[in-house]
Image (tube, rainbow, N blue to C red; front, top):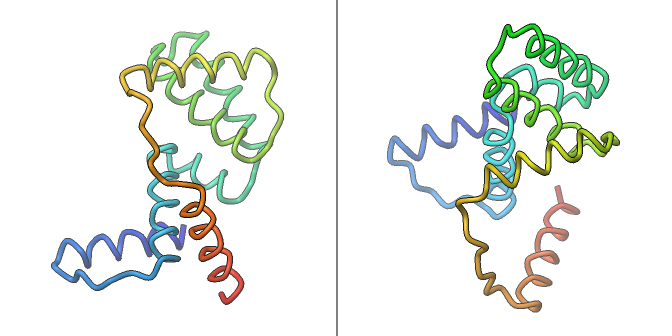
Amino acid sequence: MEELHEFQNNLDRMVAGDMTLLDELSAVRMATMAAINSAFKTPDIIRMFGARQTEELRESLERIQEEYHLKSISRAAYEEKAMEILTALKTLNEPLSDEEAAFLQKQMQHKFSGFQQSNNNVNQAQQQNLISNFGNQAKTD
C-alpha cells in the first residue's frame, strides 16, 4: 500500500506541474503499480495480493461464486470480481483448476478482443540493454 501512496504522490506532483525527471527505477515502479491498479480494482484484492494471501483470495472467490449462484450479484459483477481474483492467484503462481484457467482465458480474450496486437519495434540489443540497466539498478538499491 505504501507504493500506492508513493505512486499517487508522484501523480499529484506531476498534475501540479512538477515535471522533474524520474529515474528509470521509479518509472518501472510506477508502471508496475499502474498495472496492478488497472488489474485489481478492489482494495481487498490489492491488499491480499500484496500480502500474498492466496487462501484468503480463494475464500473470496468462493464467496462471490456463492453470491452469484444465490443471485445476490449480477453476472457482470461476478465475472469482473472472479477475473480479478483469478488473475491475482495466477500472478502469485497459485495453481488454477482447468475450469478456472478456462474461465480466465475466456474472460481475457473477451476483454481484449477489441485490441490489435502491437508491433514491437524494440530489437534484441535494446531489450538486452534495458534488462541489463534494470538489473544493475536493482543491485544498487
